[in-house]
Length: 198
Image 1 (cartoon, rainbow, N blue to C red):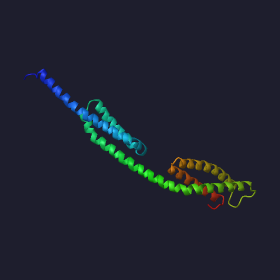
Image 2 (image 1 turned 45 degrees about the horizontal axis):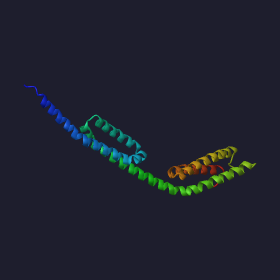
Image 3 (image 1 turned 135 degrees about the horizontal axis):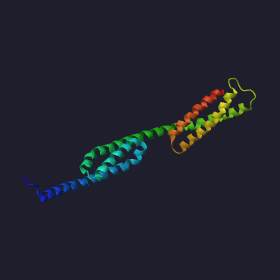
Image 4 (image 1 turned 120 degrees about the horizontal axis):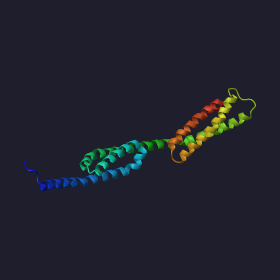
């Protein structure tokens, strides 16, 4: 059997190189398009679906490695899964953003009454604590320990309420309401312990 001539081998090599070159352009375009699609949703995804974004980033990184190694066929084979992952990431992040915005709107509505009620409760407790601190005889059911607990509770409530107000000022009503309700619950307990009507 004759050995294949140099020219036949050279022609074969040229055909293979041409085939690779033919795949290179589409592979590079596909990766660029995927990167662009991911860039468009990155900020939203980072905020509303960070774990999923990390997984998609890892997928993209693998495809880019294949591209750098010249494995254009591998790149093209991996693109459908990567594009689906990016599309799913966009859907998840959008849904999570909508949920967060709805929760924030609900919290904003709840903040109104809370921002009015809680300061009144804290003022009432503060006034009651001042009166009882000056009194020689504590009312029935109120002990020195109860009064001391109310005083320290008052300080922590004022601090927590300040945090809640700051959160509301910055537009984070979900955190504001969560902290505000905790202060209201604490205020109710202290009022009860001091024999006040909440």
